[in-house]
Image 1 (cartoon, rainbow, N blue to C red):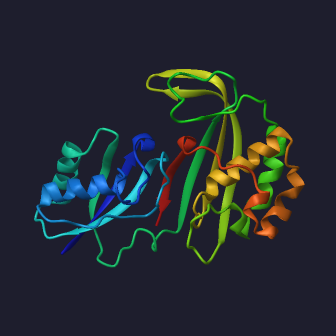
Image 2 (image 1 turned 90 degrees about the vertical axis):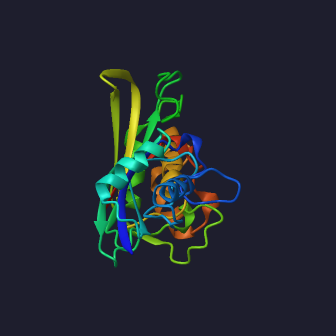
Length: 255
């Protein structure tokens, strides 16, 4: 049995997240069906990150085992021939048998895009959270400082998670305002905020809950100096709303 490693990008709009669920269309389910069509045998496809429904990925990593004699390059071409256009295999390679896409990950990075304006581009509404109220970037940056380092993020974990260890380490959390976004060969002008986070791992909905809380700080509804108190409380009710999934992108996974 060989182990094949895939680097995958996808638009998560039409899918109920990465992980297989009964009666739902998921990224993992689509890829497993495609692998079976090509190799003739069922294979479990294990992903590095269980992205939520509607979340996108530029650098998801997954592996599957197969007895197929097709080389990795041929498997990549075959998968892209049968996968829907909103799921693409960017790279395929043979992996060491001991490689585990989740356990071997050293760090992961996500970014989130906010359109801080009343009317945003028709080409970006699927990929941004439109927040019409003007946000105070300085307050958001001040609030973000509390999250950097090794922290217990129980207050920022989504309901339904069975994770027992809620401690994670955020290495970097940056917030920047952009006056344009490159799209195709043009530039879409507007008022955008990009929030980028890199950590050793993330809890369910953690990035979206942090973003939602930072937006509340930017609106002046949650003081920036309350972030440490919220973290220490481990109480999800004290943090801000969960930001919509559509603005979140899994950027890359480092091994």
